[in-house]
Amino acid sequence: MTEAWLASLSAGGSINGQARAAALAVARAAVAEPVGKISYQSAGKLLVIGTETTIETALAALGSFENISTTGLVTGNGAAAPVLSGYLGHFELLVAAAEPRVYDLVLDLGSPPLLQAELPPPGYFAPGEDPLAVRAALDELPDLTGEFEKPQYFSYDASICAHGRSGITACTRCLQACPTDAISSLGDTIEVDPNLCQGAGSCATACPTGAITYSYPLLSDSLDRLRAMLKTYRESGGAGAVLLFHDGAAGRDVVAAVAAQLPDHVLPVEVEELGSVGMDTWLSALAYGAAAVVLLGTSGLPQKVEHEIQAQLGIAGALLAGMGYSPDVLQYARQQGADLLALLENLSMLSNPEPAGFAGLNEKRTVIRLAVDHLFASATAQTRPLVSLPAGAPFGEVLLDKTRCTLCLACVSQCPASALSAGDETPQLGFIEANCVQCGLCCRSCPEDAIAITPRYLYDFPTRNTRRVLYEEEPFACIQCGKPFATRSVIEQITKKMRGHAMFQGDALARIKMCEDCRVVDIYDDQGGDTQTGIGQPLPGGSS
Image 1 (cartoon, one colour):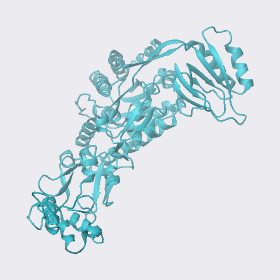
Image 2 (cartoon, helix red, strand yellow):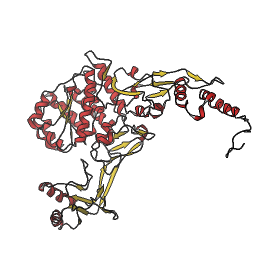
Image 3 (cartoon, one colour):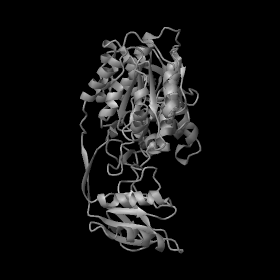
Image 4 (cartoon, helix red, strand yellow):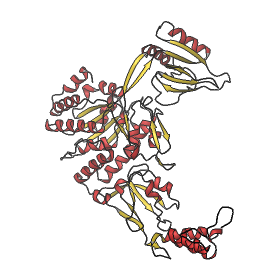
């Protein structure tokens, strides 16, 4: 925020205006530090891609800058398309079978551009045919020499990632939500290239488990900041606080343009990127006492980020509606000027006289649960015990077809969130709904196609957190020694499949109903062998 901005926001003489000024002062005092930094080094070695004419024009414009050395690459004319990858200080170009060449900067004047990410990597410019955009790129390039730093925006915990197990791919939400193409699959886990990541935040918003988290600022720091702001606003006499989230670039300019007319109960909250705040933050803000939350979108917001925000709003809105609240207390707005002011004046607002007191945490699902629990307990309308959620929601139940399930428990070994579990003594499949992230790994790993998932939310936490038995059987006992070793359905399935096998003809089919030890004894007895000495065992070549 600029000083002029602060002056116009603090000028209101109303109680709400004075309370807002106090709340914003608290927000300014909260300074987040990045948990890590990413460095780039550029010597100004520039690659210009395009036609001969566009390249010559660009080279002429850049010729006066001593810190820029340029190389042109003419594309088209039937030649094989070059392959480009990388980031500021390390762009790698592959042309046909030639050795790769490395550049610090790229000005891509070709059509279409070689890199298609919505947010291209730092140091890459693809202005198209717009003369103003080309001029802006040419003006910026000379400044991109030297050493640069940016925050590392993310943290990743592979142990709770639901991307895959045992070669089976399930959750790909972060890959679909990333506008920089910084995320790639590594089999059962994912990899985030910190050099490509630009902090859009939609990956952390989309992640159902919290395996990817936003690190600048941390979720805990953001929540503590919001809680302090709203507490100060309330204790200063303010009422009906509306939080207006906006980014620090285009969004700040939109809000600054209407700052003098902004209603006194509206508190602007600047964030690094709009996609970095998700359902955990919005619902917590309402639980902390905000009457409404507005997310200010701009034309520069990547489509993937906007799509994820809209999807998360659908889930959060369904959660609110199930508790009797209007989902319109969460709004995504693209309006500017007078239209934005009109929206802010006519918002649906909720009243929450007892704000929540939980502190900020860095555990996404726990934070959502705490916020929803508080809002559920504070609801005045008649609430339902559960609510159906839109597809893709990270909460829900597992449905089991008992006529198909053999209790092989492959699903248990695949579940990344410990939502499914085996029994201790009895063949059994248990389920804890609070843990389920709806990744679908259980469905994909079930050999009998006995499992389905459905998104929903149980509001009662003890019920949601209690293990319930989906299916159980009496163990099947060995027909020789009586030791339990499998389930009846497993034995029946194997018997059915092995009935025509050459090794299980006649009396040998009964071996399927024996435990491993008794099965070995029966094989040797049938061959006249000695199970202790091995006498009588067939040897290689058929002799004994």
